[in-house]
Image (tube, rainbow, N blue to C red; front, side, top):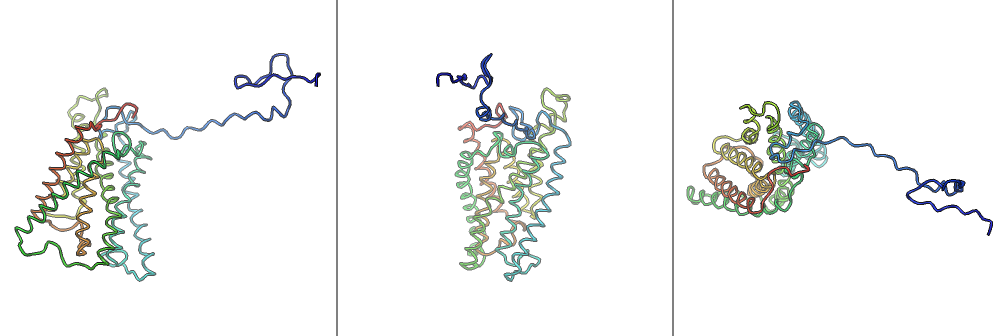
Length: 359
């Protein structure tokens, strides 16, 4: 209609009508979008300092001396709760099916008890992740590597190298036993196809998580808790002898390796065996800037040993005993070859060893 009043078009750059013009009809006014609510910022995580090596990622700009011991206390308090809960649940589930707890396990069935034991160790991952997130106020990914994530390609390459080294370990183990004990079988009596298949399935399903959890707890969480102490260059008391020692990787590696050995119920040769393995994996974690190399060898090593023990059912005594000199030699060959190959590969590929700019 010729006498209809024209209204200026609305644009994104102006939400008001032109000067001297009446406002738009009410229907148009109601169609305007309401301002989006401003999101409330979440709790701020503390980012590692650029250039920090793996064991120093907890030395953030807001490091406080009380955070690491508090994080350890949280782990020591939370893990028993998880342990009791899982064991009680396993017992309750097993009872209707004829399971009976005894001194050897919570279900009375060796394979089921093996599954419970491995699952309990795997639960260390969420427990230490909780401590890192809530107390240390760091991204959980900083447990995995200096890049704040698990470097999958590097992990797979390390698994390939680990397969070769574990094969060398098995060759030394079987070869030494054949020479020193000719005619005697290395393994015990076969448990039977059904029992072996069930135990092997549990091993293949849960051992990777069990071995990785031990790395996350002892080569990840514990190394970083210890490594956070000691003033950095630019901080007060940075030139003191104590600060120089604490910020070096030596205390973190030593504590991680020793605690790893003491947590196993071994003696004699076996204790030396596990100590060598733990110290070597701690050093390799520091050198490569992440857990991938240690996780790869630990997973394959444990999978092979548990698979062998599934053959004769000796997994019920896993983690105990005095070991043997030829097993120690096998571990020395395995770990020595693995360290050399991984270091060579890390240098060749330029694997990052320190926190990149941006955290």
